Length: 303
Ligand SMILES: Cc1cc2nc3c(=O)[nH]c(=O)nc-3n(C[C@H](O)[C@H](O)[C@H](O)COP(=O)(O)O)c2cc1C
Image 1 (cartoon, rainbow, N blue to C red):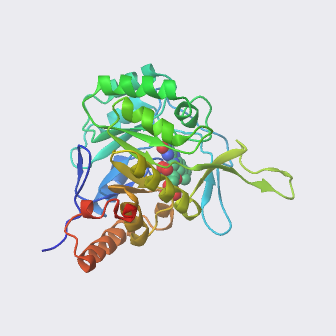
Image 2 (spheres, rainbow, N blue to C red):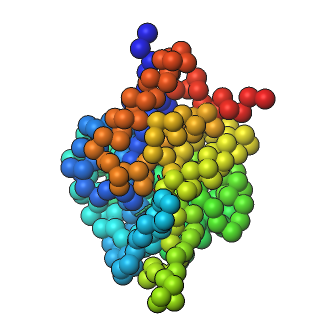
């Protein structure tokens, strides 16, 4: 029998396990449709705030010698109300709406905006490493994580995912707090706080000084986090960080992820990358005689 690419992340059912990560191409319904048709199982939107945010002045992104990117875009986005209007006509594409805010009320207000939209899940950005008072600064504060997750879970029946990253506190505690507060799944990880300095000008290159490292250099770190979370907690996990090939995808499944997200890899080749990874996963499953993704999830944890 032909293996199936279908996967479930708790209550979230997807036809294919590879999604678009937040912040990458994530602002237009047309682009979402094209990504879905080219093999993405779901798309995660740019993180949305209550009001539109302009983001930081240039330079906001640079490539790293040897691979990867450092970005400090500053969460520029059109704001949740405008974005909700834009995706309201959507009926076909599984859309995961990423939200960013500082207090529970921010998230509650944004969720109201999406009442008339078909939303597959919400992903709470508790991990952006380069904007003050949101993202990682929230993720690093367990009391705030508890209040936000509890408030969001009380305001919607749609599944809620927490996206975690590496901040100043132990991210595993953030995961534990989110689980205790009722979160449905975890995405791990966001970009890793980093910087670049220009030797001639003798100053940081990014206007914000600090940014987040993404792409192949963070893959082993992300893989370690997925393995650690799945070893410690019983929670569905979405792996993210440096994934660019089907082999990477399989490694994340084996570490404990039920689905994965692609960010930086989209920059190289967004037209065929989903299809290529799906094809490679299917061939691997045939070779190893697996009929579904769940059979592989967490296998690397066997002693
Ligand atoms: C330009 C850029 C913008 C991003 N914007 C967001 C964002 O708005 N929200 C978020 O949760 N993650 C954001 N991310 C992080 C990605 O979703 C992803 O977690 C990270 O890049 C690691 O995956 P990758 O190595 O496949 O890129 C952004 C990443 C990049 C490179």
